[in-house]
Length: 134
Image (cartoon, rainbow, N blue to C red; front, side, top):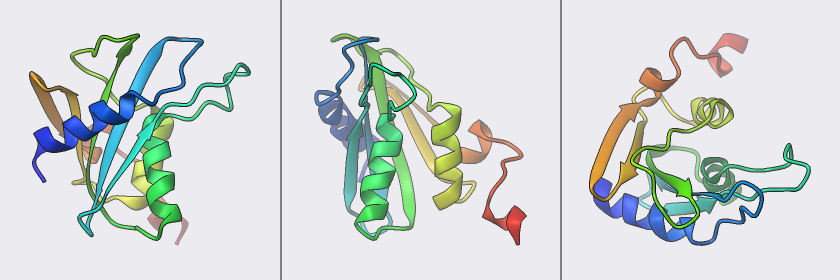
């Protein structure tokens, strides 16, 4: 699957965002090694801490369906109906990615006009993971 096609799936997922408090809508599309795409959106909560990011929604969906290996994720976000030029995953989402992905996992950010790709290692250097617990 191309980066652009994955980005298009993230844009579609963003439409399902439940973000009445911040107005910041995020969509994510996660490509598993199986070739299946898992989408997610952010789901806010009035208490804020129970809020779940789009990236984690996609990962939890995938893991709950048995997928454990991943190739890349596309992330789009922005306030209300506009899509920002760039929407990076938060630190918690990066840590979840580190649980299931190797350092070369591709993180695709931006929009259809401007796509930027980084690796997990670039966004989360010196990460703590399951290897540290062995």
